[in-house]
Amino acid sequence: MYLCSMFIKPKLAIQDFNYPLPDTKIAYSPAIDRAGSKLLVWDQTIIAESNYSQIAEFIPSNATLVFNNSKVIAARILFDKINAEKQVSSIEIFCLEPTEKYTPVLLAMQATKKVEWNCLVGGAKKWKEDALTKQVIINNETVLFSAKKISNADGKFIIEFSWDHPNLTFSEILTAIGNIPLPPYIQRKASEEDKDRYQTTYAIEEGSVAAPTAGLHFNTAIFESLSNKKIHQKYLTLHVGAGTFMPVKSDTIDEHNMHAEFIEVDASLIQFLANKSKDPLIAVGTTSLRSLESVYWLGVKAFVFKNNNGVNISANEMHLGQWEAYELAAHNVPIAQAMNALLNWLQENNSNKLIAKTQLMVTPGYQFKICDALITNFHQPKSTLLLIIAAITGDKWKMVYQHALENDYRFLSYGDGSLFWIHNR
Image 1 (cartoon, rainbow, N blue to C red):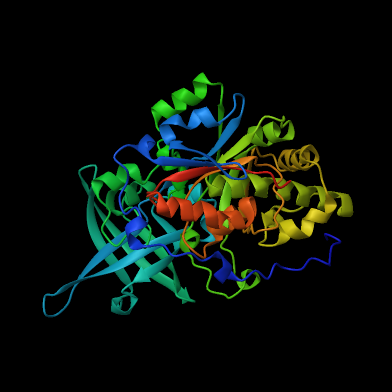
Image 2: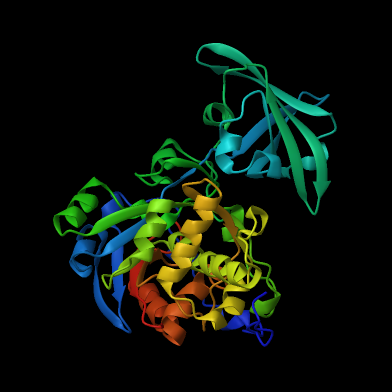
């Protein structure tokens, strides 16, 4: 389809993206104030150090910030079991993503009576019964909630959840009985503070099992400072999956299987991209960056398919594989042409929103098409997120991270962050 059979996957050694991260440098709890976190600004070298309350000073007027408005769901569900000796143990079900017949995610969250999810199960060996049940009080009514195993493959379970109140949605059920899924390296129970702080202030679309953490720093005062400088804000949705924490276990990047995540992008944002000016477009978080870049490549995919076959690509094929961007790069499709191909595809499908899956893996050597800058936290060693930073900075990421370690920046989800300007077009 792409007419570029010469593409070779990058065989980068993951050990080259390792660095020592002492436990003392990891932020296990949020900063006192969202906007009080430190901010490092990089433009081919470190050019400033400040904090998020001053971020507007480092962004030109008429720039556009794109935020991921996905909302973290209370994806961890606990069932208590009492054995013959009256000992209490727990089985934890971690909802990863709904099954295909309950996608997109909104359909699963608004489901009534029952729904199916792909899940991880902690304490699965203790689950001997056909179904687990628990009673919960919601709106002063007693609701019987059940979980039933449908199948199990590669350590993941398909679980059917059901409840005996016909008017309650799964979203309401999770809100009542679920727990916020903190990152796996934070070995403590989620607190009342986490319910607020492990959520962006602009989160709307339910579906993530991890926060788009770069956005955790933004509060009302920052949004006011951006508006006062005529810095615009736009929103898209990428539902962050548990795969975002998955370490790269292979020796080289080409052997790593990148996780897939749902993106949802309104036609209005695609139209904005079609008319993209020279004013900077800044992704707030790696999820926003991957979404924006994926939208471009999906547009290229739609354009190439239509040109080669005379018909539109099917909805089932409107997803972006791990290496498709690199295969498609030979076509050199302008942004406007790619975006218009997507808009035509949406019109043909009577839709005003693109809903697709992306496995885009950004590695050093990737040529950015949409994003001019990235606002992000400091990432784990040997992670796909760190590869994105290396794609922007080359080997200079090592200098940036060493500087952050030596100057008491806080790392990972609740930590400090950076503004990286992108020049590799």
